[in-house]
Image 1 (cartoon, rainbow, N blue to C red):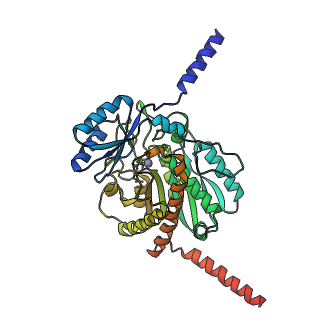
Image 2 (image 1 turned 135 degrees about the horizontal axis):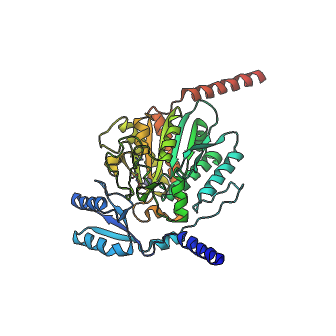
Length: 436
Ligand code: 0X9
Ligand code: ZN
């Protein structure tokens, strides 16, 4: 009897831990030609939570990525054909693409990540730990908050001294957007090991707070159970998960967010209802001197600035957009990748309760940007590993340019650091004179 019970338990464990498969699910790249077609797609997105819209049909959307299950494909295609809406099937069988995605193991103490593979949460954390040990005079391991399943939100602080302005990077809040965690690790690696003079200066001149995985429960879930999971993992009225980029206490649930727990844009039961956003926001609030806040998402190749609830050019809209557009020029140099820029509402769609709007409105951070990384409709959240390196390199290029252009527009003028470096230069001159 005991043997039977054990065998039964083992069978149940095996069945219940089986990964969700996306056999014959397809990705559609829908290309609306006019406002009417966009309206129709918007109705479909809002009335039918069955389809998984990987990108939302915003008023100026040039393309919309929709995933459909085998049983939905016929209905979706019929509807699009009926209204004469153009589309391409960019991934016929999503499971095939998932199967090709490499997740390599990280070798402890090697400090070596390859930029042609994705990594698990544990490996990213181990790698960060090893990097902190190897660069202990400038790197500190930091914890920005805690998840529903009690995982710490781990990150690194890179600092070459006191009194510097802060650049804060929040990444991976949407767990299926794997390219964001990978690129964030690449940026950490560059700031710590690059020989490029501008990158070294960027590392030296700022205090960097970098969190590659701000939704750790969701990220683990994407590796173990459902590759395309977006929200956190807290049970909600018969469903699971809140969209952590709709849960911040700024215009919460006002627009572009859902009150339905089944929706991928579910805003939660109240502002900061979720441990991840509550604890992370407290942490961010505790940091003085944030000059630039970056949040990383995918996909669409868009650089967004606040705000998501209105198209009005609020705060320092014109400066931010000018700086951002120039940075996207720098991004395009290496591989020709084109980004569009604008505030959230004008460039994509109305969406309130996001982290970027909160840091801008509540903490008055001078520069706040949201990147939507590669690509533009072909693979979406399943960006093939051979694009990790190019995506990371071009984003790094743009980051250097953001700093450069920011300075030209009067930002990043950290008088303390300037004074400190002037002081060290004059000390050097005095020492040299003594020896002459
Ligand atoms: O809808 C979102 O939360 C983001 N797009 S995504 O496809 N990655 O889900 C964009 C939100 C706008 N960005 C910020 N306000 N940070
Ligand atoms: Zn996202």
